[in-house]
Amino acid sequence: HETLRELAASRTIGELYSGLSSTPYAPFITAVTPEGIHRGLSEAFAHQRDKLIRGVDKPYKAVFNLFFVAKYALVDEKTLQMHCPDPQEIFRQIDMDHIGLLKKSLLTLPVTEQRQLKKMVGSYFDLLNLYNLVKFRLLYRQSVEETLLYMLPYGERFKLEELALLCDAGTIEQLSRSVEPVLGEGFDDYETFRKVLYRYHRQQLLSVWSGYPFSIALPFSLLRLIEIEIMDLRAITEGVAFGFTGSEIMAMTVGG
Image 1 (cartoon, rainbow, N blue to C red):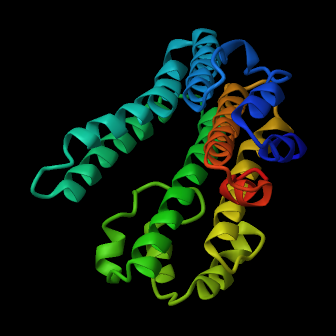
Image 2: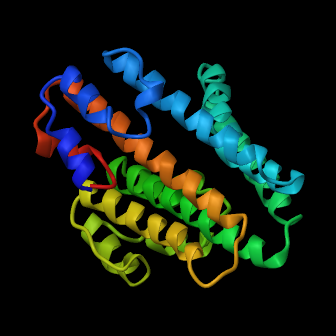
């Protein structure tokens, strides 16, 4: 948190570049420009990801590749379909196919590790589904039926039946009261909602670090935590490039 806050206080990209020089990302960032920082962060993640995937056995490789590599290819695939007559339906099919492969690959793992990975992957889809629920139901005011079309058939604590009930919430405060028992805290605006969601997801990621002998869940958790940190560093880079204040930039992050 403190490091993010210090980086968010940077007044120029040069200052941000200097701040990043004491982090593990420094060797990958070779240009003092927003694009240079973004490119360096991508390379740092790819390096860490490939190093971790190289060290795991074949059945685990499939899960890592689907979650940490194929996930990004989905965005490109969707971009190609943007101008189809019904892009949302095609996007949904792309997501469903991806989740189907992910579920299948998890089933090939030993039960204990399957359980740990399902908890982490499931909480990631909880996060996406709750995002979409707020976006389509509360912000765009779509019907319950339309909103449920955007829900992905995977989750750790929020199954489709529960998501259907949550669609009854008319405001973000009402939604907060319904999900607080699971997420552990409430929220009253979109910014806080994002941070609460990510804290819940991070708790699931950290829960695999205690009480077990070494498991494949540990490198998976580590890589996902790095992915979230990089997401925050990208937000900070954008904020500094646009001349936002430190507090405005911190509002764009999920780890701060």
